[in-house]
Image: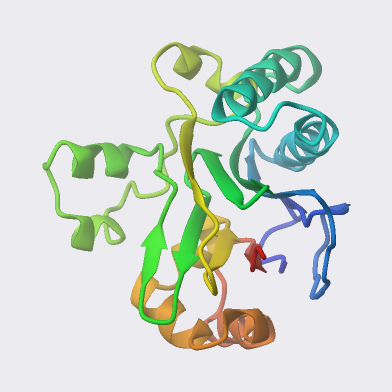
Length: 241
């Protein structure tokens, strides 16, 4: 986790144990638990509002998801309840993206709203399991522009869906993206805010993290520093066993 050239850290994460919102965080831990929750949120809204939105969602997810039935429907319901609560408790114009992973009983569930992402990394491949809710991704989905040119589009950071009062109307037209799969032997997962995905291509991420992603977190953080972050940058690398 690294604060970029901004006045404050608007990213927030859940690392399976705690909620963090720090200007700089570099930590490695092993967690032995029946269920684990990992989350990356990227707040928006200016001043302290984005910071408040991302932390609110992380805290609510940490509190609720670990107590819910382990299913995609339960995750969708939890995020919907958090959205309703956010409308009442957060400033009017703020919101946050969210990308999360829950693991239990050799199963993994992925969810996201906005453009924070979840990647699956094997020795040979990197696959994005999340799906951006953005203007540019909508153009890609409609085959109006090619995926390879999406990162160069001038409106690539225009987000159409997330959690918070700013996205109240969007909840009528969009839904949380979800994905589930069995835990893959030796696969790792990378959750990140767009501070990372905008800075590095999928191929560059794979090259940096291979062949042992769990040992390359510090190297990736250093590479971000060398490239010069243009936004707050947060990521979690995890292996589920």
